[in-house]
Length: 237
Image 1 (cartoon, rainbow, N blue to C red):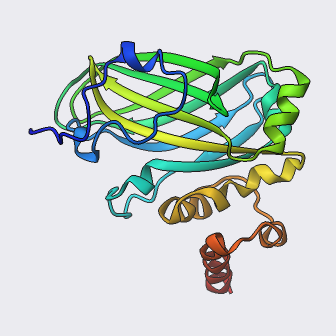
Image 2 (cartoon, one colour; image 1 turned 45 degrees about the horizontal axis):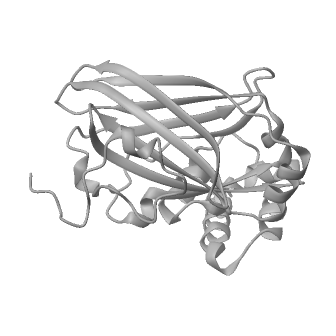
């Protein structure tokens, strides 16, 4: 495979020393030569088992074809920033090649200031297997004034997720975060996905989504979310 020249070779040692989010994606979509595909994704409070997010992809959806599909936006209540620990579970499939030393490095920033950094390794995946990767994050303490600042500046908290096999970067995803004073806004994650992921969330989320509440948060950019909900409501009738 000939690597596109606009994507430099990046090592795990380099990304763990980044002091700000990457300006762009550091590998092409085609770098995922292992055909790793993520499935169901859960975020929860491991101490109370409260579920913040539970989504799964539509298996009939087309594959990712643009960088926009590698970026996701989340909306969580302010209390999310106060947790001492966070639990995540992700299901993923691998293609016909074995995967050795599958490593995820995740870096979180607020206004180019590093908030958190995580480094996890899934040692080995057998070919054509379905795997579950469950993690418990210990979350560094944030001062009240830091939390207030983050809440006042939605989507200025950002993260990079780098996925390596050995020292080779095969996937790079980005995320942006909004934290609100409204607990019910955790249901509004459906509003901040790309079009493809909006559909995923509406169809598969286990959270009770308030239609009225979604309308209150509607923007022109997310009009598709309301239209999809209306379509689904009509089908039920």
